[in-house]
Amino acid sequence: MFDSMLFWSWIGRIAGALVLAFLLLPIFAIVPLAFNGGSIVAYPLDGVSTKWFAAVVSTPRWLSAVWNSLIVACGTVAISVPLGTFAAIGLERLRFPGKALVAAVLISPMIVPVIITAVGVYFFFAPLGLANSLFGLVLAHAAIAVPFVFVTVTAAIGQLDKGLLRAASSLGAAPPSVFFRVTLPLIVPGVASGSIFAFAASFDEVVIAMMITGTGQRTLPRELLSGARENLDPTVLAVACIILGVSAGLLLAFTFIRSRGQPEPT
Image (cartoon, rainbow, N blue to C red; front, side, top):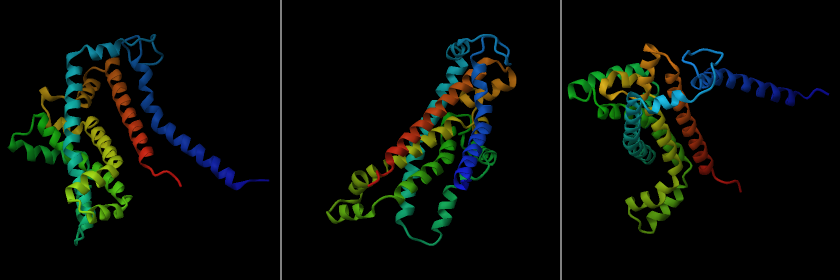
C-alpha cells in the first residue's frame, strides 16, 4: 500500500540533502587543494603536504593579518554586546509609539547592502581621522554587529519569566541587582550567541575593511582577497581553510550554547 506520508518525508530529505550539497560542496572543494604538494592550484593533486599551512604561520604578512582580525573582532564584541544587550532590554521594557520603528532601525544594518554601509562609514569617519585605523574599523564593525546581538538577546528575553523579575523587585532588590543577579544569568545564552555572531560578522567582513583600513591595518579576509587577485597559490587556500575552521568552530559553539539554553522537557 502506498504511504504518502513516508513518500513525501523521503522527498523532503532528498531535497534537503541536495540543497546542502549545492551550498557546501563548492566551499569544501578548496580544502583538498590546500593540502596539495605542488604549487599549481588544480586537480588532480600533486601529492599531499601541509607545507602551505606552515608557510602561512611563517609569513609575517599573514601573521599580521590574523592578529589584526583578532584585535578587531574582539574589540567589536566588546562594544557591540553591551550595546545590543541594553538596547534589547530597554525596548522590551519601554512602551512608546514608534517602538517597532526603533527596532527596525536597530536591525537595519543587517538589511542594508554592506557596500552602502562601507561608503557611508568612510565618508563619516574620514573627516574625524578614524580612517586607516583599526579603531575606526572596530567602530564600523560594531555598527553591523549590534543587530545580531539585539536579535539574539531579544529572543532570550522573550522566553524570560517576568515573574522572577517582579519577585526580586518585591523583595527589595535594586534595579542593578535585579539585572546582574536575575536577568543577566537567565539571558546568558542569548548574549553568548550574540557574541559569537558579532565575532563572526567582524572576522569574516571584507568590504568595510577595504574602505576603512590602509596598508598597515590589513585584516585576514582583505589579505585573502588580495592574494586571490594578485597571486593565487595554495597558501591562499590554506588561509581559506583556516577561516573555514574558525567559522565551523563558531557554529559548533553556537549550537552547543543553543542546546544548553533550551528548557528541558517536563
